[in-house]
Length: 430
Image (cartoon, rainbow, N blue to C red):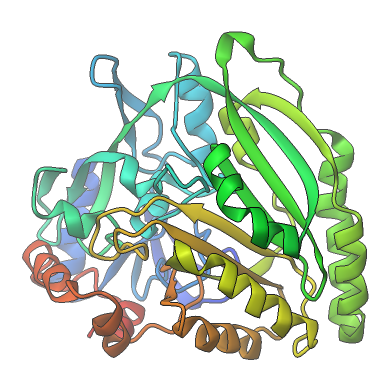
């Protein structure tokens, strides 16, 4: 089993570990042996995913586990329309693997760098009011628990309601079976829309499009609207991303962000320019190529779910707040929707929900901005995404997640020695 001692950092650089032993097991047996060794040494162990997190959810204290040597498609059950993958498989690897067999995922987010285990353990989601998160597409988990035993959990098992968003607290997830659908294409369209028109047309837009998301530019009346709708695979007219669009979304954004970091007073101007430069256009491609976009500019992010009926009221207050220029922020605020789903730690709490994601360029002060939004969202029933920056405490979780005690009971059953309960997880759960 390959191992190395190194300084650990997540993608955003928000959480680091000065020194941790990182292991790369290549089999379930090696994972089991490693967990038993860590238990004997009274250490903690953390599955790190692809480190594409903003919170400390993947931060190891003593031992970190990378599943980079446990990737790929294990089995495809065409009768059940289920695919089993090694849990270390990156999301960007799943689309091509499934397309070869005529299948795809029902929904994805706009970043595909995460591992399947990490994405499903934190509730990674895309947009679409009839569609759930990646976690909702899982039908079976294969994991090695805190005593080094391999077990499989299906949706019929009471443990599934906790594993739905398990935060890596129940074991090292090594295999994941996920529901798939016949391969399909997506027709994507980007347009400009005002805040007022969004408020007036929100319901009709989410009801008439399979996927819809908005980008609100701080303080500006003009937004970007992206919609995506299914196209039969055999009728697909593939149109790859235009190089100019990638140039705008990455190189130009990088340059403007660097300017804002050096001269914070320019953020309002940059936001205004960005709103006017929203690319307008349409293209088609196989679904996984439309869902995800390259994200080369590093940032820090927090995101909140709220009941869907609050969307218009919150957007209106958000626009009023950001128009006052209380913060130096130029990154657009991402607005999405998701079908409500079961799962003890699902931020939707079984209600159809709107999600608002707030970003700040890496290296720029973000704490006051994020704290303000956290406070503002409380009256809208906002619940933070666990994989992104949040201010959760055990007291706060108790208020927002009524079945948290069931979650902790299940966690103790799978991990009686608390081998997965790292310092970060203790702070929010104990």
